[in-house]
Image (cartoon, rainbow, N blue to C red; front, side, top):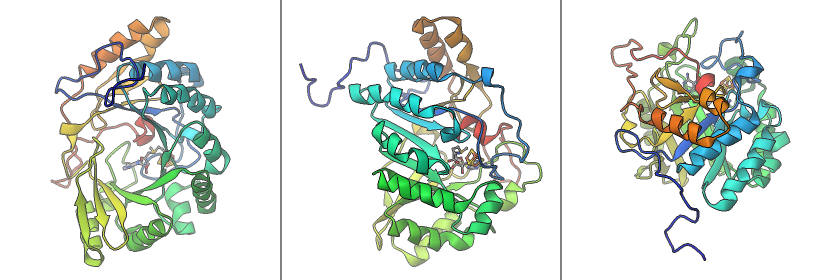
Length: 346
Ligand code: SAM
Ligand code: SF4
């Protein structure tokens, strides 16, 4: 018998995940690898050491983990990394998740990618039920692209974006706002996205990982300033839609385009946070801006009984903090966390 309108079409067998601050957890971001074919300067050091294979969750373990979260009420699953599409056989995992889309339990299966492998995988991802993807791209200048990604080449990424659009995937571009690097490309990026009917989101650079030689404070380009620049050329209308995450959106009335701002450092978005993150080794981080985490790999591997895993998941959600402590306001990076972004997948 079909479910009545407005009711979930799948039986939620258990009580959903609710954290101590009454936030329901509906969104899971999973890093499937710590490896990448790029070495973006704000994300990785040039000589990154990667984890031994045995530490990573296998594709079967990733399936069990994600399926457990979906049983507990997660409706949106974002696959990330490192670069998710460099994980061997990753399509097998995407195809396995299709069953949760088919059952109606999962509303959205998506990924964040650097775009380098989309030429190869875009059509298969679309066939697996992916509808929208985020592609990270900070510049449209070949030389600057090679500088910022160290190992990446722009033409390959642009071909990947073409392939994604040809496969019917809706593409959103994510651009890290970097002072003195892509400030001068604001309007070029905006116009390029408008021409291709792509939304665009700017991300403030976050104090992640080993700051080392990279002067992140020098790179910090406030999105308030960026928004101010856009407002000089366009009429901006604030959109009320929220993703439960740190993004806020405006519409440029002249182009109809949606522009997002991810400002984890200058605004507090934590009160509506509905997300948790799993690393490729099965650690759960319930807040991107805090060090606190719990291990889910041990309970996953300890028993084939999913009840053990679900108990561990509930316990971890019970520790989700109220919010993060990033603070650039005194020109020091208070609240900085030591791991790299590639570890938690952003
Ligand atoms: N490799 C994929 C990609 O680049 O889209 C997925 C993983 S990457 C860690 C996810 C996002 O984090 C990318 O959009 C990247 O630009 C962003 N990112 C990495 N390091 C960052 C930092 N320190 N501050 C802000 N964003 C960062
Ligand atoms: Fe790789 Fe993405 Fe990190 Fe760049 S931001 S090094 S593409 S994981």
